[in-house]
Image (cartoon, rainbow, N blue to C red; front, top):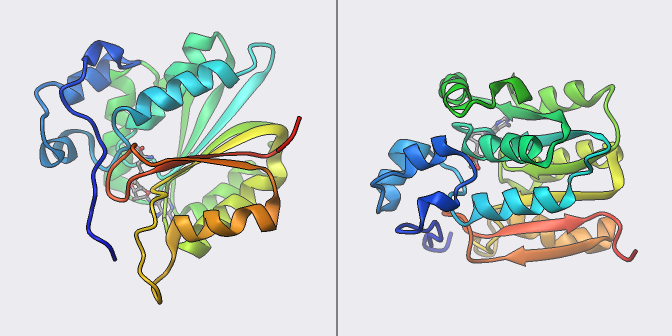
Length: 226
Ligand SMILES: C[S@@+](CC[C@H](N)C(=O)[O-])C[C@H]1O[C@@H](n2cnc3c(N)ncnc32)[C@H](O)[C@@H]1O
């Protein structure tokens, strides 16, 4: 594995954050270690802002929008996703999937403090099982954020579970996209992204200076050319 690189920002204007609970969690935080203590393994700023504004520009106010997040952690990006639904004036909810019960209970507290709990459905368990079950009767998803296990085959499995449920104009966001693996190691998210165009077509945009170890956030657009 290559050495860690962090692109979470500190010292920015907290007024830019989409929800006051995030500002509470970021208050006085100047290092990655402090950030980990308060908001966990989240993408942080500017990733939160990127996803929030992307959603404001993508959500369809005439539809009931279902947003998927795998890997809830402490619910910080879940807050962003739910706040975007609210601020866009959209009906709908966020379905988020977390393996660890301690993370899930910390998430519940954060969602309540952020005043977005009523727009979020938290599924506890391994997303390889809980995601297909939860999506059984759902279709027309326009936004999924895949951020649970970052191993190649886990990301691929999550993506292929979501794929048949996506609308043609859907976006899928991946975190931890930097090429961190050395040769002979699991190629993780970056390896999957390298294989994506040949396997599924579409458009892929990778933003390197976002998020933390592993950095990078990518957006895949299902319908490549409109
Ligand atoms: C990087 S964190 C997610 C950060 C979160 N999306 C955010 O931006 O705030 C990854 C999370 O995925 C969870 N996770 C890992 N494997 C999982 C699995 N198979 N099913 C569900 N959650 C999983 C971990 O427990 C951890 O909380």
